[in-house]
Length: 525
Image (tube, rainbow, N blue to C red):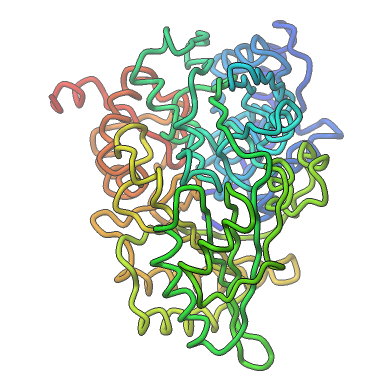
């Protein structure tokens, strides 16, 4: 836990919360909860999937509001500003560092929870959909699947992830090697800006429309809804989940070969590798390969056996199903009817980090990495293949820069339960040490990271005012820490956009984009 997640004075919190609630009521917004409300804790915790942020030393908001309409959302923003409350916007609650529902340094804040803004309208004729930001990935998938068996949307596999956060950070998923990111398939958006203005693509301007599609959440305002381009899929797709267990050298050999296969398969193929930490009782280690192929089973099997014969796939390892059924399959759900359920995903205590690999790691070093992993606490690394369409999009098309030149991403995770909480720092230290061990094998200058896998170890803004404040020095510190890691050379355009759109830094968090003060803006030209 970071030291700056501390409780503010209860009396002060209730006072500012009361001012905020009075403003809401006077503007006909009735669905909110204060710390004195009997349902407050249950509502706050309902969408917290990383249990690290339910512990007693985490700062709690002065109020939680659940807008039910665009005007409710606008009033929530204006009332928070009028009550001198920082704003944290939560769409699904999957922020790896809790940035959508926590704050820093005793700053009083309100959570604007978008869970009730979850309406979706699919137009299969034009292959588009309007989806409110509080809808989950599973709710979107379900709506699209009910509308058409031959349409889909390229987003993640977690069905309870909120669209607002996912699209704001880019949104890589199983279809991204064919259709790139969720953010690349946004056609329009409706945004509530820091002044309470309602803007669409035509009125927000090119820079802001660019920034909200991959520039991270919590910096620009609140996106009320997205217009999404749906993509064509065959009536049946092929899926597979194949595990292999054996000595470290065997598993390392499969992972080593995967580096040359996963990123180089035809665009219709997605094949990832998942490696848990630790060893089995007989000293073996394991790896699981998961795949989705936009083709029939016999065609998929032929290509995979030709490209990756070491995996030894058989026909029984592959299954054909509709795309919507595959979405449920990869979300770990029994049926597609479970996709809209916001509460299906298990909660856990966890810490994650991320990397990008740009050149294959040698067999010798993969063996060493596998040995290091075998010593770890409960956790895993997930290798997601890039290449395909991901390598055909320019690094500056959206703020997400991790395109051409990247073979695959790595997500590192350790997790534990409440009984192991006393050892949490030990587990996190192990993860950090493994991350440092991986430095020679991953991207450099900068060492890149994925903003949807938030990692406060990269650096933090250190707000001491509700509006965040900013300075030329603060922008420089952000650039050299998390800014270029997440956004590469796109960071400076994000700063310029932030300076134009939100010069008062109304929307801020520990890793938000900062505005330049006016003097800094002039000096940078």
